[in-house]
Length: 248
Image (cartoon, rainbow, N blue to C red; front, side, top):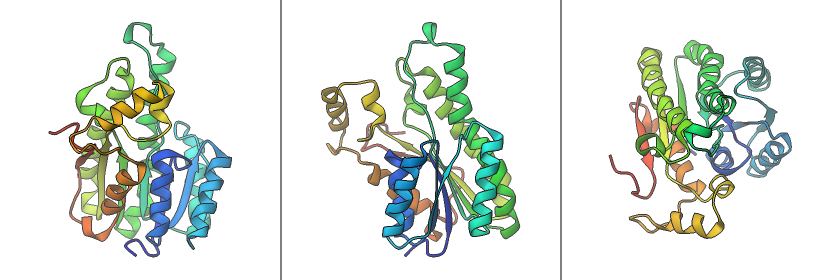
């Protein structure tokens, strides 16, 4: 098991990609903190992890709130005493053209998608520095490279995550901490279904060079690799996992 005994915190861990990552960590032997605003769903995922014989803790967190993130860190250290892996997956995906997008929605997208990365890093990095090891993996998006009509705030926030990851990787490299991003393509989760019909979603998912419908578990595999010792010397990178829809 690649992550035996490691302690992993997964924000947005209650559903979709976050759930797949949380359970993947559990299968690989990690102790998992499932952090999400949706406490009931987070507890359900934590229960699934326990069924896999992993220690798991579900915690409510609003990654856009510094006090909430601080409580997440405090409860993590109280239960497990350390942190080895931080996965920043929590995010929002709000649709509207730039000219009609409200300032509140713009700010909300950035406060959650980008601000959550900043607040969680600030909360957990000191502990990683003390042990001189750690893995930080942020979920960006292929849209960071291509843009997307009616999702300017989402695209901009995800592009900003890549810049943040690269800067943080330079800061933390001397401390033995790696920082990387995964840029998923459209995956078979609830998120795209909030803005498109089922037919549109499935057509989009199948329209890839590989012809494969990207599942959350497909993306989680890359996260698990970056969290493992096999990726000890990979940092500051943004990996596209999208069945070939974006090639850069």
